[in-house]
View 1: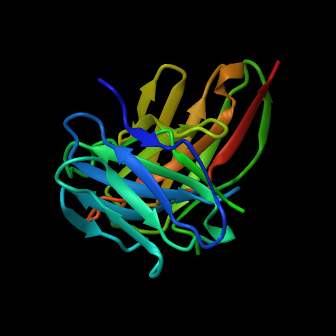
View 2 (view 1 turned 45 degrees about the vertical axis):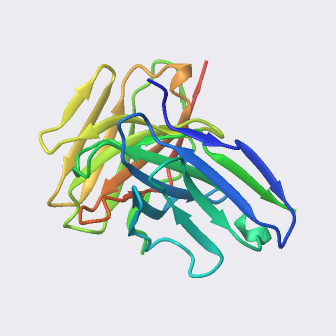
Length: 115
Length: 111
């Protein structure tokens, strides 16, 4: 059973460009979470999605960031007009149910570098 | 005030030592608790869940004190391979089911 998959693993963008990060959850998992880890900091929750629905986006910056999890295909985190402060590791996690005690399994992350 | 607080370390210990990490959380309504391990530039991996009764997994023992809002992790007989950052993680429940991470405690086990 393949784990959570993320691609690309590394992404370099110039200021003002768009970044698209993809996440395929574990097989059978319908809940996806995105977290951001800035250099030398802890992980911070960004958004929680189920298929075709955003459940909680309380951690998403108000502008330039959006996320989707379509009926078919991976979840996408999109960052428009990137700035240097967006440079970070972006981790996706998935879980099979919403139970509080259900473990979230993390993907390897996408490391975004904005030049 | 941070929601989940940890001593960042680093804790430098010799092989075979016993080391303990502590963590406090601010939300008394938090539902579930975990320790994750993160190796340099890798994703967090679940080490163990933490239960009020305390739980043990091999050399690792976790404790939760809900009254004090305090979580601990004890590692016995440290191995070189235990060197990593240990993340205290809280699930505050609710519709979001999001995890709130502490900043991590770095452990370095030396020969």
